[in-house]
Image (cartoon, rainbow, N blue to C red; front, side):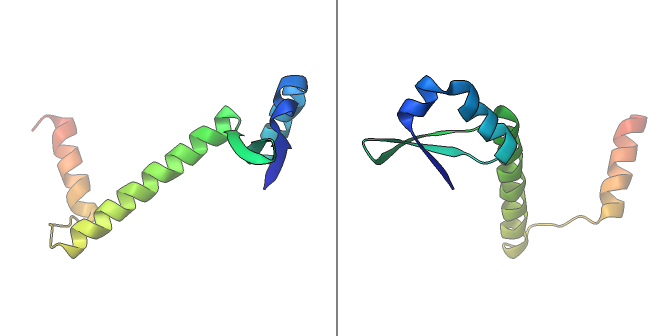
Length: 88
């Protein structure tokens, strides 16, 4: 975990952002010794968002499976997609 004083973002913006890019980790900013904000570079943030969405989809599929919802095999999905592509 990377922790910096919030003053660093004002006085050393470029260095803080470069540290975000290099580490790929969020930087926690403190104000008066207490957590105040988190800074991330955009690529790391977007990867994290994609991962969270994928985890949500997996969790929803798992819950649907537990509740008895219909599951489709890879072959069934492929056949349906082929029909849609062909316009059937």
